[in-house]
Length: 127
Image 1 (tube, rainbow, N blue to C red):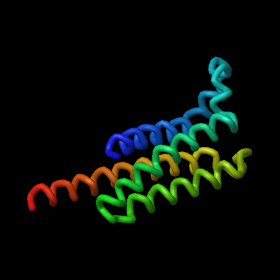
Image 2: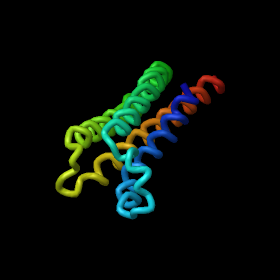
Image 3: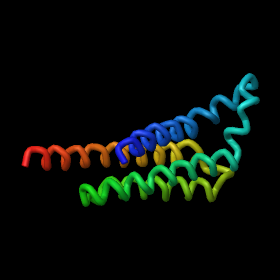
């Protein structure tokens, strides 16, 4: 589960970077070849991978440490992603904020999952 959390952290941060930087890059004609990354299909693939990594990581983490906080961070992040995905036209200036915050929250959930799991491992080792 630890490796899944590291993969999830990296993927979530890449997602946040993708959501915050891609619109800026697409504004410059030299980057029009990467326009497919801003498409609905690419976003669905990003989200699907994030969920497929997050579910086993957070389930395994919870079984180990019984703390709900890491899962809570991720759930709020996924709710923000799905709100953003539902409004793919990104009206009212929300295109950067919601999915970027979502990626950061999910990454924080993974990092917290790692931290709490390490604390439990250390406590068991010293007992």
